[in-house]
Length: 241
Length: 304
Ligand SMILES: Nc1ncnc2c1ncn2[C@@H]1O[C@H](COP(=O)(O)OP(=O)(O)OP(=O)(O)O)[C@@H](O)[C@H]1O
Ligand SMILES: [Mg+2]
Image 1 (cartoon, chains in turn brown, red):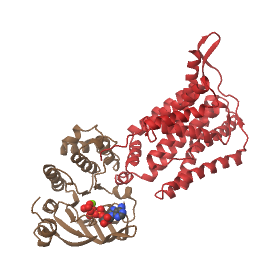
Image 2: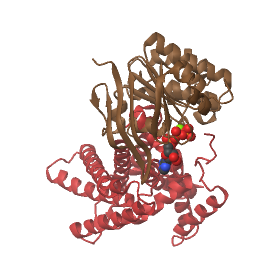
Image 3: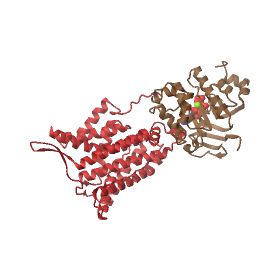
Image 4: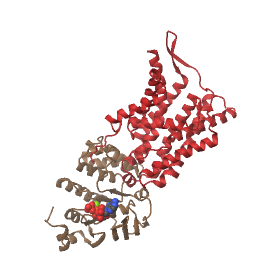
């Protein structure tokens, strides 16, 4: 069994004629937290969606767990235990919190449902209180927790989080990052994290990639990038958020 | 009073048939935002398959009516489901993602194809079926006026209530129903959670078609005459019912069907038979002016 869980090789993605990813190479090792940072429109969310096959790689390869998944349909890709908490959270607004979590477990046919539900409720107690409330009526932060909880219900081997800190109070951000760290340390969960909040992300991650305009321009250890003057100038201006 | 109750019974019976068809419109609209204009013709096909099967079953010597009807119902549902599945597969799926009017136009084309196919294969003349289920119970009698609830009406109403209850459970409580609702709200997210969106859409068509075929069987038994054109008017009425109840809403389709059936029956009973369709459509227009998303439609305001 190789140490590499996910590997992108020269992945190019287009929206119509507009190129969004210009040949991405990146690796995620088992048990690692890897982050991609970059400005708005760099192609971070597109990278995540391309891995899941929602947008298609027109060139290049995506290898997951030793298997080429580049052209598999989305519902089959995620069956390989890849779960995503996507940009904009995409909660089912007309379903209850519990139903949203049930949807998360659908991919593994509700195996271990009660146990996993307990785990998610213990991580985010507010969700248990809001259990029968409609997803659309939750606050932004609660929806973010629900999106992460829903992803965890799938028992992922690879958890992908797209800007989990967006629009949240600093305290909630801290809480969510602690949860991610704990899952990684205690359960060995592999995490692929996309963040605007570069300071937090790089502190949390083992390794990071910097993406500019659909290309990876820099990579290295989290601490290493954090102290890199270029990264500091571009993404950490104003010091620590 | 007696007359009123009799009309009520007749209206609920007719409304049941509309309601069963309306579910197919509302579910397909809910999941892919398209009006399946061929749905009324699926109902018609269901009625024809039922007629043919009934004749075949009788010819084979199965004369015990409950068994014969059960066989008819099952075969009609199965074959109509295959129709519904095929129509989606051949005519709609290839167009998914193209401009909005494209599937609508194909749907109208599909409707014409189905009508003409049946017309060619079965002939244009009206097909009669002698009454199979006769008799009933007299609920009230006054001054020689009988309020009758026929066994046929009981069968229609009971079947509809059972099917709708079962269907509501299916949509609200099972994982398949959840997957369908997820696809209604966000297909990309649903697929990210492992839902096979194409298959779920196919199943929605199949379910709608199966329910429409039940309505077709009931229509055949109740009225005793069918032709290749019955799908058009019944389809328009059921579509009206779905819009009246709030298109996309399952209880809305049931309520809308019931209301259209009642309006039509009462209007014919108290005013004039000629204008019953005008009455139904006028009420629809009035409701839509004051409640644009229908009686039970989802308000579009949603915090995201
Ligand atoms: N559906 C689309 N159609 C056309 N272009 C798109 C579409 N989605 C994204 N793009 C373009 O692709 C590029 C990459 O977008 P992407 O959403 O991946 O950026 P991002 O790094 O996630 O940005 P942000 O930090 O703002 O979320 C952008 O230039 C964007 O305008
Ligand atoms: Mg993004």
